[in-house]
Image (cartoon, rainbow, N blue to C red; front, side, top):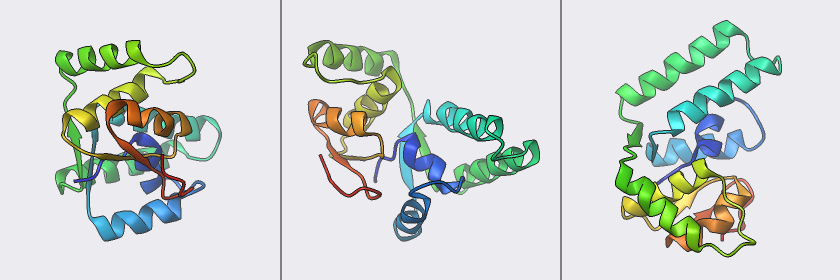
Length: 148
């Protein structure tokens, strides 16, 4: 089981920098997990592309339908975010050195991957990758392969 954050998840559906590498990896792997809030992050990424004129409303609807189909087929599995996981993320973030920059949603991805017993997390977010070791994870980026 591999964990992908939303920076990779979006690249399965939207053609943007790094999409080809992510899609090739997905084709070889055949599935992954992500925290439940990744669904909302994916929709906001689609809406950003629409706002920027890169997607029409019809294309957005089609991409979301494809995502829902991938869910039904078990290619993507979302992991729950119980209150205990949020508490765990808060405790770890409170202990981070002041120089570590980490967004709340990224802290949830890291805590979720760690809580699931995973050792690695795939992302293209440099801040998430830099913070991964604080959650006991190795951050991997197949787009810019310089692992943390």
